Each structure stands twice: as C-alpha cells, then as structure tokens.
Length: 286
Ligand code: PDD
Image (cartoon, rainbow, N blue to C red):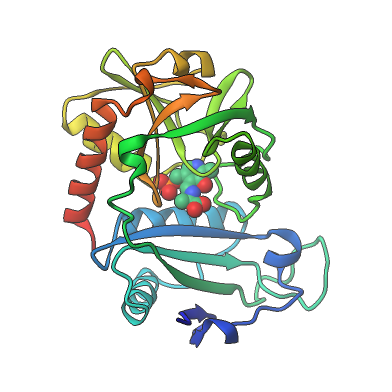
C-alpha cells in the first residue's frame, strides 16, 4: 500500500513526492534528520526529538522552519493517515535547492526542503532480539568529528553495518583512540558490578534521546550510572552490554568480536531497563 508522505507543506502519495536533483541534501548531505518511534499510535520522547532537531539545524546555521505545534500536527497526521500502530516517523530538513551545485551556502531565504514519512514496524516493542540479544563487531570510527549533529551523512555507518553483516554479526561498535564511541545508529553501554557505564556526551557521539530517558529512568530506579568511555576489552569482560536508540529502544548485546558477553544471553539489568523504558515512555507518549 502506498504511503502518504509530507513534502514542503503537502501530503502526497509517496510516488508523487519529488525533490530537486540540486537539493543540498542530495548533492552535499547538507541536511539533518530525526527518527521518532510510535507505539500504540503515539509518539515517544517527541519533545526531545524536536529539541535536538533545532539544535542540529542551529549548529549548521539553519533555522527551524516550523513551530513545534506544526511539527506535532504533521507527525500526528502521518501516523493517522498511514494507520501506524507501531513504527517510526522519519523527518528530514535540508538547506534546500539553490538551483545549481555550489560549495557555498545558498542565500538564507532559500526555502528548506522538509520531508517526513512513516515506517510501519509491527512488533517493534516485542522485538525478538530483546530475548536473544545481538552480535556486534568493532570497527574504527572514521566519521567526521561533529557526531553530535544528526546529519544525513550516513555512508560510514552504513558501510560499518554491511561489514558487520558480512562477518555474520548484526551491527558494529565504532572505536576511536581505543575507546568505543557509539554504535552505527545507537548509543552503547556496559554493566559492571551493577553500575551502568556509558560514554559521556561530547561532539564524539550523538546525544541520544533514548539515552537521556534511559539514564533518567535508571537514576530514578536508584541504579548507579557512570558516564565515561570504555574499551572493547572492558565490554567483552562486562556483566552485560546493550545499546539504545529510538528504533530499537534498549537491546542486549551478547557477543562482541566473536566473544560472548554475559554468557551469551541478555542480562537482568538490560532486560529490566528495556521494561522500564517502554513502560515509562509509553506513559508519557503523545
Ligand atoms: N539513529 N547514535 C547514532 C549515531 C544514531 O544514529 C542514533 C539514532 C543514536 C540514538 O539516538 P536516539 O536515541 O535519539 O534515537 C545514537 C536513528 C534511530 C536512525 O538513524 O535511524
């Protein structure tokens, strides 16, 4: 069934939504995006995603083209017309179409390109990987150094994901100067002696909205959290390892570079954190 998507003010059948070949998003990866999950037809952590969108745009010298109420109205309409019960809403804003290719930015009044579409993912909350865990490999982090900006430059994470698949794993953890930065499209954690360890926020990683919620719920549940970098070796020897993202929520990692973690099974802290995250986020979903 054809989706209804949003493009620059219009709701269109997906085949009719067309963007210029000169769009800065297409020729320069000059755009930012957000992915918000939908459970029970409601948006999770929506305010956080909007706040990060504005931040990403501002860091690249772009304005947020729409007020918050309008972003919410578009998200809700797409969820409704596409009958999304469990899934995602993808949003992208680019610097628009200057009418030619040029490294210099176009004039500030060039209309930005705004695209939103839904992805239906029945079973998102009941993901079987929560029971089995996933396997990761480590690869060098060769991305640019402003990973805190959620840009559409996803070629390296995509290559890393393909390398993982070629090696029979599910995903890759990126390593820089000996320490894990994050996953291809998620934030990474280990658990040691009951303490949750995750890399501190900086320009080295994306400031995950799921990460922020998880750390809040963890401290509300009196769990100890340490924000510091960790190595692959430390992760392999940890009691548990897991990752978070808007599309995966909280998922256990049971193997890193061929070595089993937590006896090759999801651990109790990860399982509990997934439960808490889903429970609390659903309560606040809009
Ligand atoms: N990715 N780190 C990176 C590099 C990411 O791409 C993502 C999200 C995260 C987690 O952020 P959040 O919890 O806000 O989703 C961390 C999205 C889901 C994607 O690209 O599809």
